[in-house]
Image (cartoon, rainbow, N blue to C red):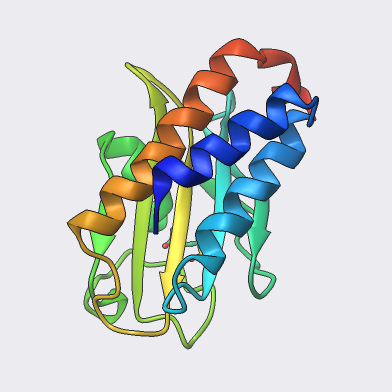
Length: 158
Ligand code: SME
């Protein structure tokens, strides 16, 4: 995937007046379609009650709409304040299964310094689908969105 190209398109759409929720939906769609090994792509947003809430996503609906900080891969990423690249989800104990088909998962934090806004979560049916290069490209989009969360806090209320 080309994170810079996605950010450029998002910037253009913002200049044209696209609302922030639609920007997030477009970001998820563009990431998802960039690699056929990405089978589920979504954004979880961190709310003041220390719960991650599912926002825009592409892929099968999941039961995990709310995830507490510290729970699963997603909640652990927030608790430990770091990205998570899990090559084989079957080998970890605190995994929350979205789909029985998922084999690997990547969580990239959307953060502005110490402030964590949420995360981009990717699942793949393939083992070890995510590498450092992919993480770096997803991080570009996450960093772009982080700057928008800073600029437009009103949209957090949606
Ligand atoms: N697997 C995640 C839950 C989210 S679903 O993958 C969409 C976790 O363990 O936190």
